[in-house]
Amino acid sequence: MTDESSITHLTVKRRQVLETGAVAGALLLTGLPRAAYARDLPDVRADVPIEPVDVTLQVNGQLQQMHLDPRTTLLDALREHLALTGTKKGCDHGQCGACTVLLDGRRINSCLTLAVMHDGQTITTIEGLAEGDALHPMQAAFVEHDGFQCGYCTSGQICSAVGMIAESRAGMPSYETEDLAVAHPKLSEPEIRERMSGNICRCGAYPNIVAAIRQVAETTT
Image 1 (cartoon, rainbow, N blue to C red):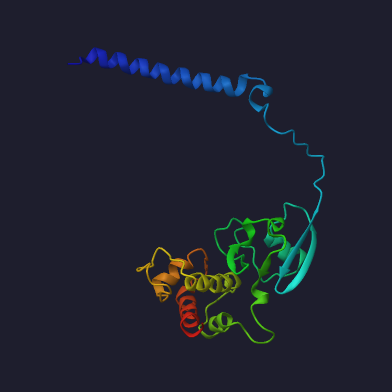
Image 2: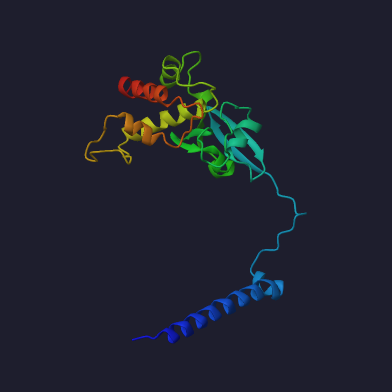
């Protein structure tokens, strides 16, 4: 049986170990020369210019050739270089979905990817969904169901909804999919809300957005 004096002795020894480790860590961070902990880091010089690169994108059916800083995001390439400002910059951290576009038919957050990564690929923005004066069915449904208020998130919501329906029809399940054996499950309200959870509406127009998406999912093929 352990007596009280031995417990006290062990506690003191453990505290000493922790204090010694803390001191050693502080010395390691502050006392060693730079070469000892940064010898493998590249020598990055701020005065070395970054050379622009050529990027070719098929955007809304048109070939676009750009000369870009390789650090340019796809979002900034669309907005700042091609003047396609329908794609919105919201959080710029991939959390709100306002910048959603379609890349080869799949929805992506354009703020989280670089334009140079998609050289030669096909991009569809909100401006490319309509055919002339004829709205895309999803655009028309958003108007019919008043699926927007301020409208800032709407372009991302619509592009995401178009991509989401395509994913569902391709058999891609979600967390709410009840039967994985069903090739083309009906998009219920919980399914739509789950699949659209990456798109934030600060005005709270979610019921109308869901209604618009359900209409398109049930009336188009």
